[in-house]
Amino acid sequence: MVISVASGKGGTGKTLVATSLALSLKDREKVQLLDCDVEEPNAHLFLKPTFTHSKTVSIPIPKVDEERCAYCGKCAEACHFNAIAVMKEKVLIFRELCHGCGVCSYVCPESAISEDGREIGVVELGYSDGVRFVQGTLIVGEPIAPPVIREVKESAGRGGIVIIDVPPGTSCPVVEAVKGSDFCILVTEPTPFGLNDLALAVETMRELDIPCGVILNRAGVGNGKVEEYCKKEGIPILLTIPLDTEIARLYSRGITLAEGMPEWKEHFLALFNRIREITNERISSAKR
Amino acid sequence: MKELVVLSGKGGTGKTSIVGSFAALAKGKVLADCDVDAADLHLLLSPSVKQESEFWSGRVAVIDEEKCTQCGLCQELCRFKAITDFKVDPISCEGCGYCYHACPVEAITMKESMSGHWFISDTRYGPLVHARLGIAQENSGKLVAVVRQQAKQIAEEKSLDYIISDGPPGIGCPVVSSLSGADLALLVTEPTLSGMHDLERVLGVCRHFGVPALVCINKYDLNEENTRQIESNCLSQGVKVEGRIPFDNVVTRSIVQGVPVVDYSDGRVTREIKRMWDILSMMLRNGSKG
Image (cartoon, rainbow over all chains, first blue to last red; front, side, top):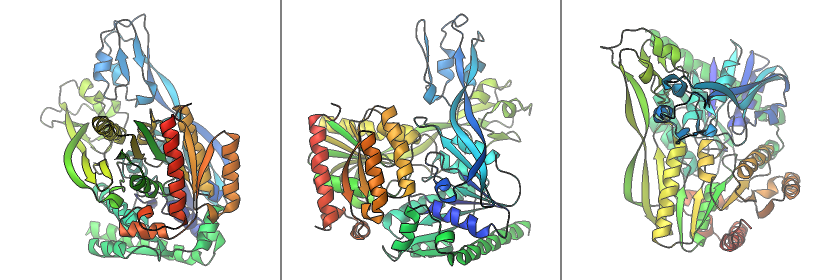
């Protein structure tokens, strides 16, 4: 089963939830944690894994053989990402803009374009206290995260419970990270910002047809609008975590709830059971 | 005209509350919400929309079933695994057009798709340019570029002194698009291991694109040891820490009221944000690049 942890708004507690859930489950299930927030991977700060393998992530980018090039401009015309400009006697490649789709080499009538690997990130694999851990890291200055996220997901082992720490927002990196999940936990906080971004995240999950439920973090400040929204939309609130300076202090030092306040393990196990029930019901109703 | 962009790396460190407060404090500015996939600044500024425009940028491949001979070439060539069983998954399709060029029977067309909206609004603090990327859409970087370009145009037309942008979290494409060519970046962090780790990466992006950066530590008293560590890390890289905002629930209360915290309270959070704006505005006026 694949459970992703997303939020819309950043800083609501995704990583705290993903790591605490992994550590609460590890004695009962085979657990893998995939940190797909490759722009700002943080789960390692909490799980402190020992990495055993790493591999670089590259995307193919064009290399022009100027001996062959006739400067016809067909490659630049075909490139949807404006990554190629053809001048009178020079071809400019804007490497950061290239998505590695390969259309330029395909359309070149002179076969003057070959492809070179361009390193954009790294994927590391290891273990942390019985949890298999995979993280991706985008190289600073590189703009395109999805290929690194794809590689993290492809590096996951089969079977067991896979927990995915998703980046904030609702655009392509989020879609890449949550695609294929059986369930998505949306972590939010009871403020207008939290609610606005939760609604966007819910729309995204509906578009992708992934069932979701909410964890309300820092409950006690703000207002009751998130609960009202969830009730109206029929989205279950799976867990409530209070605003507590002790939790915030533990978090600031990189300590999960499962370790710093072990009584929370039970809450996370109950959360998992609830998610399993929801996904099982969905499977059996789909069969009917 | 000078452009300030507020970034953080890690999400939820307080970018929008700070930008909303600068909106209330700064004179002669246009505001730009560059967090186009989860925009929140409008919740503090209650804008009235004056102009709404569609953002057409994406495109997806469409296969004509009548013409398709099911040869499978497109499926084989697509590098984004967007075609299965001779159908295109519009969410996976990046619109590159490889399949369109390669199809031997010309069964594939590229259909333009609307990927969002952008708005020019009036607020009680001045004009705001904001946007909404469509759900699960691509091209957030291009939409950010449109927002910035519109903000710049307004600033030029009205001879405004500042563009103040609320940036997205992370370091990827919309961040690069928000940052490149700006005059100054304010990086808002918090004294947590995650905040510190993410600050280092976003500082790296600022260096990469040659934009000078200043740091603000929000909720600095949550972990004063980490705050000291951030200060010493910044010092060793020649980066100034210009703001230390204490943890106070007044910020959340102001968000619930839908107003910037500086218009909600006269407390220590407000005093610190005002002090920070005085420094930033002076730096912007004097040319931060020197």
